[in-house]
Image 1 (cartoon, each protein chain N blue to C red):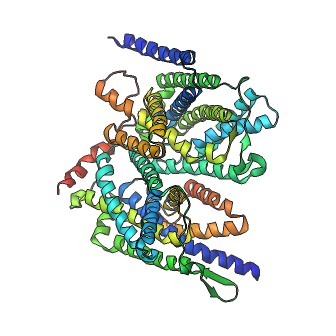
Image 2 (cartoon, chains in turn purple, red):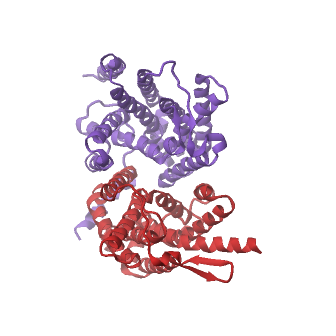
Length: 338
Length: 292
């Protein structure tokens, strides 16, 4: 099959998948199933948004709960001030972008683990501030969130999550094929080299984060509106940050459909585990993560792509080894036998 | 005058808490220095140490100040096995995978302990708990905190000695300086990293055991200490164990003073603000950039 034909088939497959996903409520009526599917698509969208920063740009953000929480709290607070729902959502996306600018300005000066830790710190500061300012955020008691849709049906939420996922996926495809995408991947592979050929690394990393934060905030607003009530330890917690990152990394960071696959597998199996293993479900979930890390080291899609050379899309190696890692692996191996 | 006493009292309490933080942070720094792994299971290791000490306190009725040694030994072996079985096979993959692996491990440990002991809060009761030691009319220190402080100090000094003055320590520092030339001078990188991971886990486990008499016990107790140990490692300069120790004491004092003047709920927030400031202005850490 020629490259162009293959691309066409890929596009058709993806469109068909989303059309099928949109038609699911016609067949599936159970609220519970739709709720699980809502979560699957919501985290797929969040994972895809994370992927712009974590996957394609190679900046391991472990603080995406900050944007998620800003989206959730933004919707609650702006509508409390009298803004119509849609305006409140848009405003909270703007606020998330402002926060991302601030966080990016500090964190992007750091690299590797330092960057990851600083993103955790920002998210935690937001969580603690939300907890400790009861006059504004309701503190630990929480705050009410308006319903985004006119009728309180899970179907509207499910459909919005599917559309959000499709939108983020569309934007990802657009970015990956644009100049911006190549800049981002160049930064991921080797930031210094990218800078030496004139790529303004700080600027492009920030652009990736701003896009990512806006979509994450939208996801946060959607999530909050489903629950109608939020507390800091729920929407600003490290659990959200790590879940988003885990979904994307396990699916395959830096691959197009990795986060979608990751979310389908992780979120649905987490739900199944909850029903079968009950209290042990997190344990089984942890074991699943370990097995993937041990046997599919580039994530599910990343490793499969490498093995099958199937579904090939331009961004291949998910932040594959920096050159020193590859080169210098040998002496370490040699030492084992001694 | 009262003002000065309450501040002094807060600082002293902060130093007592800080010594335990220091032990936790040193373990994290050793692991980070020698392996470049941000250990997301560090809090779970501490929690495991607490539960081992708790189990020994319940069944044979062992004093926690002895049982913490067993917890340390247990975590050393556990950490070594974790390194050999789970972390060594994925060395050379991306940093992301190390983080995922330790996150997965942390989930397993927390949920595993919850299955065995339940999610309830526990607190042990030893006679020492109600004793306070008075220094003058205004200052008094809680006896178990004081005992934990002294033991933590000894452990920290011992750890420092091991890293600075033994063959293992020299090898560990060599790996921290240059992971790729260390094997060229005959260092068995895997064994040293395994032992370092074990010692790091043991430090967290012993700190957990020492925390047991003065703290609540529940499966997720480690999470807050995990976050604090990140702060300490960055504050002290990534991978510097002396730096992490000093940072632990600083953190303890700052938290204690924050609690006194602003309220307990802001203490952790102040930790992170310091953390962000240090990362922004002195990414090599407050205390220079010496490694391990």
